[in-house]
Image (cartoon, rainbow, N blue to C red; front, top):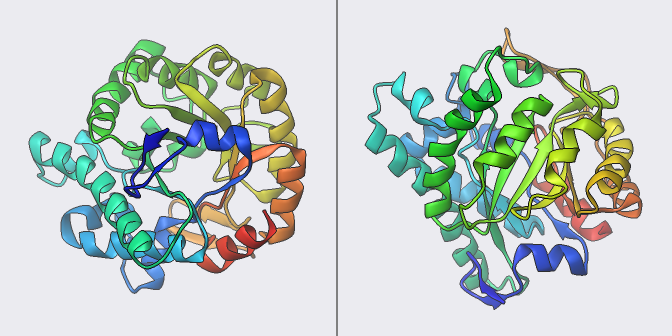
Length: 309
């Protein structure tokens, strides 16, 4: 038993996934945009860690209120390099990374005080190297860096996030199997469980590798408690669930986007949503144990997922 971000003693997230299905939150950015915030710069939602942290707490609360049991922090695009380009010192950047976990914890505390009786967890988001570049590279991978360089890039930020004591680390939107392997190595010894989640297209990583290759490094990594996919079209999920479960034998995490397409040059979404609660039932039946949504999936969709699963 562990004491989670909610302040209540209950099973850890790994134990909960072994026992049944857990509902994740939805997209942080679209919830903030719905509240009237302009996220049209390279820091995306991480900018509000420095400028309007209370807005991030309110976004987390909206998802807890909708039925989510796991909040993913607003640290996806946060990092020393990203903040450094805005003149934020390394020490201040580290503090903002810690703050991202504290804000989610505060939302969990307030949700519990408001009567939420279910267990609540906080997962600290660590986006891929491409998120720092803020040029759409997280949907391509193949950065031209060695595995060692990628591991050295990720480790300092992961150490800061782990020291803030989240319930898990969310190694998310990974486009490249090489980066996934580097992240598996980067979380060793941190003392915080993690999930590894790829963004995929056409049944392969965005960099074009087979999913069997991408998931394999996680199979024997004790730190990795779940594997899966996020920020992909809903139609990609069911196949990936089967591969992830078969290759690793671990619980599967899925949180696709709405099915709309992101235009990195225009920094806008195009197309129509294809996300529905019926998908969640299909994913659960296929073996997914941690289910939510990513970009353009809001509290209404998470509430529908919670009713289904």
